[in-house]
Amino acid sequence: MIKLKPKTWLAAACAIALAACKPAAPQDGPAARLRAAAEAGTPLYGHQDDLMYGHAWNANLDEARDLSRSDVKDACGHYPAILGLDLGGIELGHPRNLDGNDFALMRQAAVEHHARGGIVTLSWHLRNPLTGGDAWDVSSDRAVASVLPGGEKHALFTEWLDRLADWILSLKDAQGAQIPVVWRPWHEHSGSWFWWGRNLCSDEEFNALWRMTYDHLVHVRGIEGMVWAISPNYMDRDFEQWETRYPGDAYVDVVGLDCYASADRERYLRQMNAGLSSLQRFCEEHGKILAVTETGLESLPDPVWWTGTLSEALRGFPVSYVLTWRNASDRPTHFFAPFAGQASADDFAAWIRQDKITVL
Ligand code: BMA
Image (cartoon, rainbow, N blue to C red; front, top):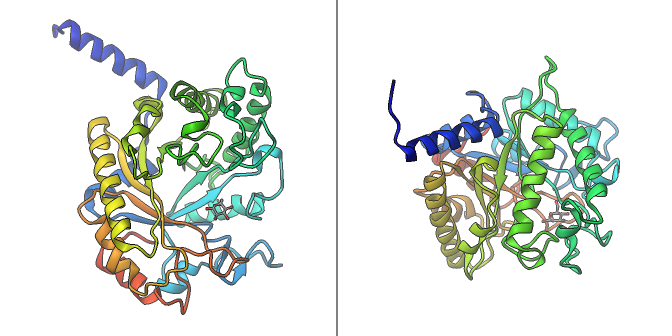
């Protein structure tokens, strides 16, 4: 029998307790694939709402509801490896999300993307449960407190979580197995533009919100295979403060950076370098997977942004995936991925090849 020192006993007991809390991840699930991509230096490319609509088309409005289109595929010949979808609106039982995506069509897109070998990531721009406003309604600093146990909106919020869980549980493959997703709630919590942001709640409240979400979805509703991603937005001042709002290693798998580019290339490179250096260290210390959970240059006016800027920003970092935001079909300048004929399309295709970016 091996004799363990008290400290080792404590560590072993903690490991057992954590293992009981967090279901074991399957070897071929998204977490294992992301880890492998980070180690191999072959990050997966992701695009928000890729199959749902693009710069000049929208499957939601199309009679045929054709999900085979993709701006990314038009630009480089491949679908993105990661499909980002947002569940904002599901909490109210709306048939469409905040950007006009039909939830039934989103389900179909997620199922088809998974069948093709892709990974689905879900975010949630949910309404403000206290004020009735949208996710950006920061008029009250009591919204998070109100949904915690004992708060006046706790029962309402539990219903919201149940509607969300129902949709996620409806993602089944052809064999009827649950499709595992990368779930990225409470994003950009280092900033103060969402009702769960930095100035809108305390560290304790934020961490309690995350753990409550985890317990409800994983333990009460039994959603299997969820990979939990936390994604602070890069902040020029005291970025590392985000770490006080980290619910604990048992509740998180991926630590990703949200950081957008602008015309100021040097500023973006500086921010990405500072943000990724800091998150890389955090991931190494906590055994987590590094990602760029949101980035992009709106309207892509720089024809060589991919090989000339993004490539440099990511160089040397063990990033598992990088996701660019949506190509709105109803706002001509609101796009973050190229489409056929867009100024940076050829450079995007070159970046995919050159930097061994994983696409489908
Ligand atoms: C933002 C913009 C909004 C959109 C939101 C959620 O960054 O793209 O138009 O409603 O994301 O997708």
